[in-house]
Length: 208
Image 1 (cartoon, rainbow, N blue to C red):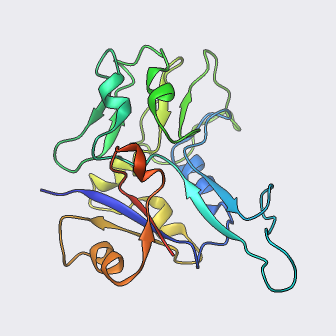
Image 2 (cartoon, rainbow, N blue to C red):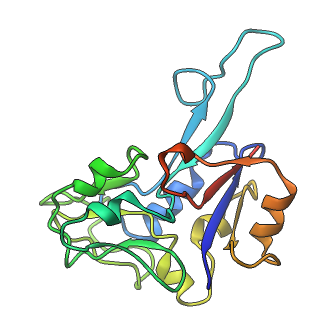
């Protein structure tokens, strides 16, 4: 069985947010919605280093989005079954038609900010739609999040953030295939998962 996962190389990622902005355009996201964003590990603010000069200054970036967990808390708690785990590849998706906007999934998810409630009257940067025509429609009062670009995967393509990254910091593929690029990368590099102690089994890895 296929199980998709992603690896982000924290030594390559520059925190440029190109992945976040490309995602916004390709999915025609409402102004109030963002599927992913870059965070700084270092100082208190974005692109601020931590530590003391000159020998202990540190700064690195990681991008935060849905972790497409093995045992997602959002799926367990959803009262309508709108939050679902796709059997054929492990993607965690939200059925907008079934979502009632109760925000239970947002409360249950240990990864703060990866799910967003679309407002009753969402606004858009332009007065016409952008991006992939196959991307899901944005329904008011429903919860949305990163889908690993399910529409692109269904066409045999990779998620857009993989192809768009100028630093080649992202790897994507089948974690159950030992010959896949991501499996080889994870076997060769030290890595970590965010909040692995929460027991959800995140499928996004951060290379050290």
